[in-house]
Amino acid sequence: MRWPPAPVRRLAVGLAVIAALFTPSAATLWIWSPDAGDVQLRVTQLTQSYGIPLLSELEVPPLLADAVVATEDERFYSHHGVDSIGLARALLYDVVNVCLCQGGSTITQQLVKDLYLGGSDRGYNKLEDLALALKVERVLTKRQIMADY
Image 1: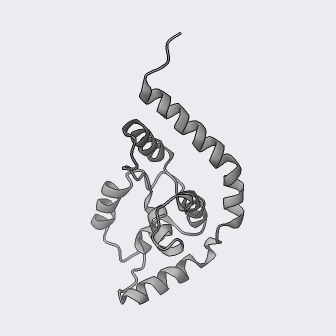
Image 2: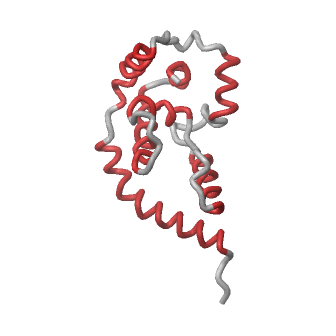
Image 3: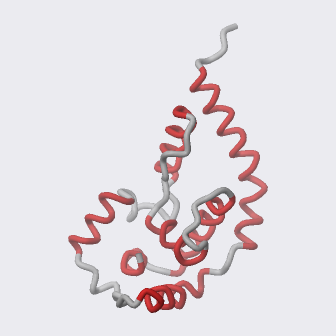
């Protein structure tokens, strides 16, 4: 019996490791990650700290929103905070190329990183931003997320 090619083996091992780590952690992360009820307060505090105006969801130019979606998160309007297709694509690329090159983060996850995780995109925070993104999507509309982003 022949072994599958090295990239396929790497992918299988990577998926097995992620499943082993993620499954027990998912429930824990949901329970222990911060509540998203204060997301608007955090946005206000962050914009004030940088001295920039806070836009309402009606003030975001549609052309700007379309450009952000096109470059950052093409499935923004069809997922609930986490883009499983984009995440799988990024994971596959990283496993095949043996690197941590691809992001796979949605607009909501990027917002969460800045508001709750101090901009960090390392290690355990990647899993935490998944849980937080799902929580934020339960609280805010897509238009409000875009304005906050």
